[in-house]
Structures are given as structure tokens and as C-alpha cells.
Length: 630
Image (tube, rainbow, N blue to C red; front, side):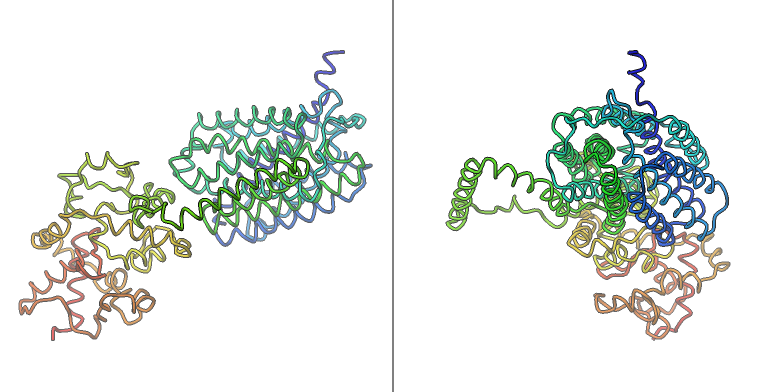
């Protein structure tokens, strides 16, 4: 008898775990990997994901209005639909096919979740239903963080999703009578609309944080890259899910959701700084598990026992919080690449103010006393400020360059750019004087970097003007042909872009100017490069690397003309500037090559230090033929 009671409700555990595994590892992860492998990403991904959201919202609202008499049949049909969608992704897909699969995923997953939570008492057992909900949720997240599955190919993830659906289908075939609802599990009188807002805010934060971590190498490496991180995250999910069961039973839904918000809000604020990814990687799964347990338990065990009302409310929760909240969170992360502090503050007010109002009504005398004390303290502070007792010293101020360094860290620029010129190497000729390693080690944190997908930046302030840096951040390919750097135009909607430009412009040593002068005086293209230049298409190289500023229709020239210190010459018609009065064509080409390679310090013209000498010489030869010197 004890053995049967212990295993009472195992069907519900399997169904809850299967639903979470399918959603997390396939619908939210594996399916996107499959689309990316087929070249469906960026803007082309939006209609596909829009189809999934449309199917999810529609099915959530419809499933919440259907009769409970066919609950088991609808659940099994939804599981078959989920399995069919996963199997469909194993075939080649066009844009239309991908949208159709996404719509099927949305419809099937929404029907599965709403039907399951509204009728979960049929499968969850009567001995410890809330514990079974927490166990199913925690096991679902633990399986998703199983390293071989998390790092599996899209094909293997799809096959796993099919297997999970079949397990859920087998569990759904065995059902019992609906369990009696446990009176201890209560929402503590919070209005349903408020609970709906809370769930929406939590899913919004979760989706935004997940997208930011997944698309930021610096954050991803510190959170769930590597088997150790994955195992730790999975265990945290399981342990906190079981703790959420205890919290729901003792303190109700409001306290559980408030703690979940505190964990997620703390993680989102920590994610603003990649160096704080480690503590964020603990708070994030804790917050997700807390609200995920409530997301299943609240519609199934904490709401009114009337099945029609329970189904209707479950449909609204998953349509608004689950699908719309998730879409809004991902959209915010795509556009802002961060979770703004003001958004966290607004969400906090949404959680705290209703609870504070309830407690203030109950303990109005204590609340009035606290308000009086705060008012007096505010008044004293204003009077003190008026009489100058508080002053802002220069040490309190943070310079634009210091703020820009924080932006540099937050955006993960260190993942592609180093800040260390290696001594006795080609770095010195290309970038500037060798770095002082002892001085770099004193920085907090040091930004030496170990990868160079882009150029070294330790002397970039001496080699690039603030205007060039601004253009490059907003539209990299407008001034740097073939650049793989993404646009950071969004940062110039606020102060971040200007701060980053100020920081990059500050990256130069006192010896930079002298070093550049010496490098220009000493540099000569080697004979092999001069011979190679004759085999290259100088006109094509000019149009790739120079025409953006020196052609009448150049994009940088047209878009930023008034901002240049000196408008770049249209080399097709204007005289060649900065070339001395030389009659020797070899000397003219040498001067042109030097300007092409090292730029013109004090102007907005950059150098092209990264180009081989042969290409530099080919460009110089072409420019020399554009027009005779006047």
C-alpha cells in the first residue's frame, strides 16, 4: 500500500517533465538551431517565429474553452502534434515550410500546456500533488541541461523531442479520478489579473535574459558553456523547484512569485557586466524554477475547482504570459541587447506596490510612522543640499571614458579585440609601441584579450579619429570594407555610444605620435610587393577601401560630410593633397603609399595597416594615375 502511494501521480510527473523538455530543448532551442543551419536567421526568422506565436496564442485561448470530457484525448492529440512537428524538422524546409512547422509547434504546444494544467488532477495523484508538480518541473530542467543533450545536433534534439512526446503519450493513457484540491494551497486572495501581470513580467525577464546570454559569448561562457556549468545549472533547477513546492504550500503564490522576481531581477542587473556572469548564472535558474513550478501549480491546484473557470484562466495565462510575454522579452533583447534598469524598476513596482498596499491597509499605523520618518529625512536632505553641506567632488564624477570602458566590457568587445601590442613582433610596426605589461596588470579588470577577430585597440585613439570611430560603430562597412563587426547603432540612442567613442579615443600612449612619425619615415614597400602590385587591380582595391570617402558618391562622404574636420578630396577631380612638390613619380607613389598605410594623423583619414604591402602599392599606383598633380 505504501509503495503504491509513493508512486501515486507518476503519470503527472512524466507529463510535466515531458512538456518542459519539449518546450525548452526543442521549441526554444533545437528548432532555432535547425533554422539557423538552413540559413533562416535575422529578419527572415521573424515571420517564422511570428507564426509560432500566433499558433500558440490562438490555441491557448481556444483550448481554455473546451470541455474537460475530452481532456485525455485532446492531450494525446497535442502530444502527437508536437511529435509530428519535431519529425517535420528532419526534412528540408523552405520559408513556407518552416513557418508551417512553427505554427504547428505553437498550436500543439499551447494545446498541450493548457489542457495539461487545467486537467492535471487527473494524472498528478492525491498523495502529494504539489510535490509531484515540483518534481516534474525540476526533472524537466535537469534533463534539458544534460550536457550531451544540450550540445546535441538539431537532428538529435528533434529525435529526443519525439521520444519525449511518446513518453508523455504513454503516461497519459493511465489516468485516475480527479484529486480533491488541497485547501492549504491558496493564492492568498490575489486578483487573477494581478497574478497574470506577475507571470507576464517574469516570462518577459526570463526570455530577455536567455536571449542575451545565448547571443553574448562573454556571458554564455560564464553561465552554461561546459559540462560543469550545465550540471550545476540543472541541479540548481531541481533543488529550487523542490524548494518552490515548500514555499507555495507555506506562503502561497504571491510570495513565491515575488522571490522568483527578486532572483530574475538580480540576475538581469548582474548581466549588465560580463564579469558578474557567475553569480547571475545561479540566480537566473533559481528564479526560473520558482516561477515555473507556480506556472504549473497555480492553474492546476491553486485556482478555483470549477473546471471551466480553471481552463479559461489557464488559457489566458499561457496566451498572455507564456506567448506574448516571451515574444516581448526576446524583442526587447534583440533591439536593446540588454535589460534596462528602468524596466526592472517598473516590474519591481508591479510586484511590490500591490503587496505594500495590502500590508499598509492592515498595518496603517506602522505604515504612517514609516512614511513620516521618510518625509522628515527627505526634508533634512533637501535643506542640507541647499546650504551646501553636500558637494560633489571631482572624485565623485565619472568621466565619459570611464563609462565607455564599462560599455566596452558589457558589450563583450574583449572577445574580438585585444589591447596589447606584443613586443618584438609585427604588432609594433602595425599598431604602435609595445604595451607595458605591468601597467596593464594594474587595470581592473585587465583587457589584454586573447583573440583577434578584429584589430588590436591599444593605440586606436592615435590611429583613428573620434568621427571615424563613431561611423565605424554605427555602420562598420561604411568605412571598413568587409568588416565582420556588427552595427552598434542602437547605443547612440542614448549616451552609451558617445561614452564608448570617448573610451576608444583615449586609448593611446604619449609615444604614439612619435612612433607613427618614425614608422612612416622608415617604411618602404619591399621589392616583391612592388612587383606584386602590377598584378593586382588597383582600381578595385581603391573602390573597396578608399571610395567611401574619396569618391563623389562615397557613403561616408555623403552621410557624414559636414562632420569631417576637412572634407576628403574627391580624388577623381581634385588635386592630390598632402603630397609634397615632387617630380619623381617613384617618390610620389611612395608618399601616396605611406598615406594609404598610415593615414594622416590629426585628420579623420585612417590608415590601412592591415593591408599587405602589395595592395597598398597597388592603391598608390592607381591614385597616382587618377590625375596629374597640379
